[in-house]
Amino acid sequence: MQSERKEKRGVWQSIKWWANFVTTIIMNSIIVILILIGVLFIAYYIDVRKNASTGNWKPPLYGAYVIVSTSMEPVIHVQDAILIKREEELEIGDVCTYLSKDPRWFGIMITHRIIGTDVNEDGEKVYIFKGDANETPDSMPVSGDQIYGKVIMRIPKIGYIQYFLSNAYGWIIAIVVPCVGIITFDIIKLIKTSKLSKKIKNIKKR
Image (tube, rainbow, N blue to C red):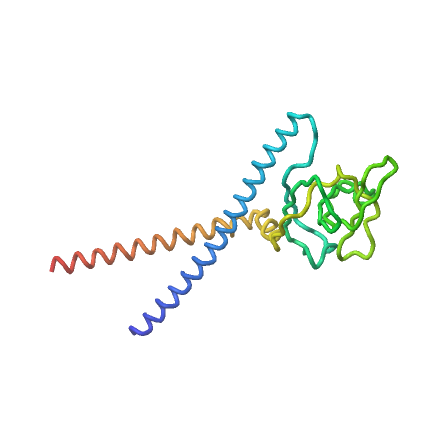
């Protein structure tokens, strides 16, 4: 009987350890994401206020996007998140995000690699982009004011977390369930501690 009880306790302790481990990872991931969002928002706000005061429109200093196509495979995968930074000087080989003016993709943010430069009819420098997985360059050259920034960081598969948390059940599973689990474990721990303290008191009275 005692060996069975010890075995059950061992299994229960193992379950609690893994539950705490998974909960910690999820909560820490959420905290890191929220901190990153907060830092980006502060940088965005300061930069926008600065640009507004000078009267010059510029893309935000930093931006973050989730990749939804395979055009940059194998460097950037679908559901990877990218962090971009506005750069004044761009070079061939840089991976950048730009606002498309192609009628087929008008108004869509595209992340591709610069493979060359050219000069348009107005004498303005333009950039030629191409997805690493695409066989041909993008159909239209891109002017500097269309480019929102250069990719400076890739966070693998974080788009799945964003999609998961964007649903109501995702928030329930990711936040409510772990919190309930932690509270339940704490209550059980308090009950056990209370019972143990009562036993000790009874032994002392004897």
